[in-house]
Image (cartoon, rainbow, N blue to C red; front, side, top):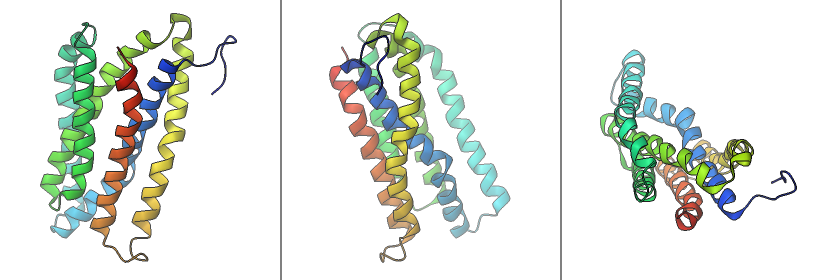
Length: 205
């Protein structure tokens, strides 16, 4: 990570960036593997491709609406001393738990319910995460640290994603089912997300 104005990233800034590295893996999962696996579960249940796309869209919309409704309240809490870290932690744990539990859902409907919970936890955590930026860095470094988080987030998210992709695509060769491979992939992403969150949770006051 490069220097800015002759000053390296501080510990708090690095911890903030690491959370982006962690949650971006979940973002990449949602955009790639997750819809494909839902299609697999829906197909096993005899749901047509038209209905599958509709149900997936409904689930994504429900998650977005729930966060939008809770946004003003969460935003107020994010600006209130003493509330930010506990609720940020709860949001992370909700998202991580939801991500891990996706692998246990064998039916398409349960899968969508867990997905909504995970997405709400993820999106809620970002409200608090964004508000923390001003607390971990100086005003004249906000843009730099934010950009670094964005860049390292996408770079770092590729690490667990590639592992998961190899595991899922090679499931037949290593003798495990698609369901088992996806369960392992969801767990890997969840663990990655949690581990990358710990430095910020531990260091933020």
